[in-house]
Image 1 (cartoon, rainbow, N blue to C red):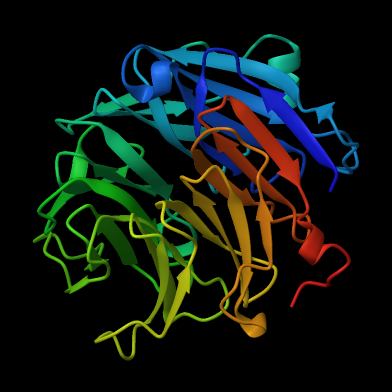
Image 2: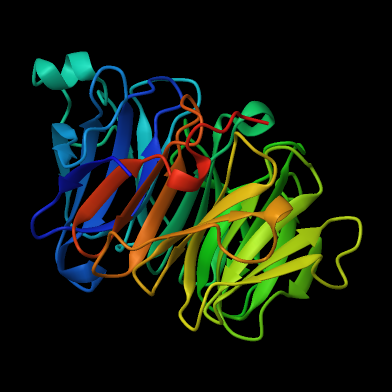
Length: 337
């Protein structure tokens, strides 16, 4: 398997996202001292021109932006190619601009964010920038047990959502149903919400895992399907039409599933980032066993994303300061479905 890599000395990877506009660009959010103390850095990275990997080749670092606290998540703006938002350990969100090759090459990327949104009382661990119906809104999930919906043109949040009893690790808008989003928490629950319900109460709350629920993602093909991952090492699939119990279950081992990413190229494929230092590739059409286990990291794997422009290309990052871009061997040569 050929891999492009980048090492961020003294910074530990938490999240990375491919650009929705440029196939070769990705953003990497990192923290100092594993996110326990110190600052954070946001890196704009670039693959080589055609996106093909030569094993051991480095991703090019186009620019680096600094924040006074750790950065735990990042999301590109869906309607402006050079704008992105980050989530921080100081409870704030930052909106940055100039995240493109031309600005970075001319050293014109501003060193300070355009806007800093500050309302959460504890770490913001998850961030999602709405697409389609919600393209102007940001969704933040915090360890203060709340979620907030923001209009990126306003300084104050639109709505605060309350319904979890413990730290919230992740929240994602549905890509196929307007105004619907999901969240997971260390209280073990999966909550569903209507972003237009300004009362801020969940539509539904179910116990998704007997232990902490750390990640969730939506299918890009079936509007009713979403997945959750927990500290119990389980990945569970859910169907909005029958939420009393999960519709499938995958076991990734005794360590936590930190992040999940449903493939935008195949309805049956998903990837998981795990605390056993691995990234696993699953194909629901081929059974309940991981089709591939990649052990390229030497610490927790925290970030995971599929490239929407290149079929089956995946990126991951971890606490070992390493970011990788590659196509899993089990998917090499397969067509998008």
